[in-house]
Image 1 (cartoon, rainbow, N blue to C red):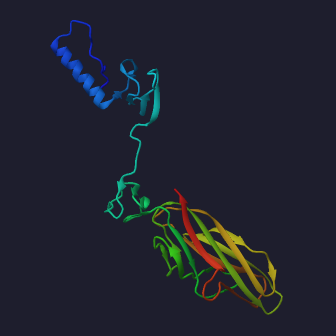
Image 2 (image 1 turned 30 degrees about the horizontal axis):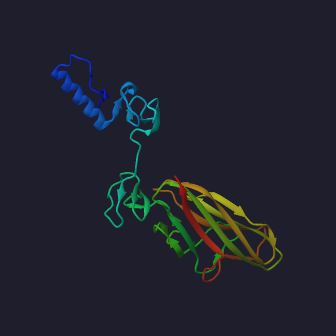
Length: 261
């Protein structure tokens, strides 16, 4: 790269060696454009580019050849592009783009779509103990784009770090032997600790109450996980409580999707 003048001097005398040197410099400048830490405006032409190494900027000369216009950052990153159905890298080289799929990110062992999503429900009603947090036994996958949910421990453990929108709602089915008051609480636990929670209105007697909780949770893409929990709060006794409905359906669901880094 060079910032030599693109015109050979017409002022004599011009010895042969000097002529060759000026010609070589001009050719190299034309071939590579300008690159250096000093402004080459005095030897530039309209629409020529300059890699301003002092400021890390890529600049282009305006049409009137009177000023430089900043085009962008030097070494501005672009995503490596891979063909649809082609072989993807087996090591983490940063985000990549696959034709027909979009942007992919490294997920521990392989590249995958960066927008994972989950929706899981239950195949039957689940009994609840009063005044005790109970892990919701969701075992019916509606979809799990990256297979990151395990039914054995009801955990969603993503392999891409970021902020995830987590939603859990369930219908409480209650019956009492007397007019007992109660309140239903649904929570999202992160790594075994309550992260989000919501409670329904206090009620008396038998009936159903649906409680929904949702919010953003940061997950580190390695060890962090989330789970749904339910709780029935009551000062009395004689309450039989459960969540969900036989065969699943719309009364209960645990959903997660990634919204960004």
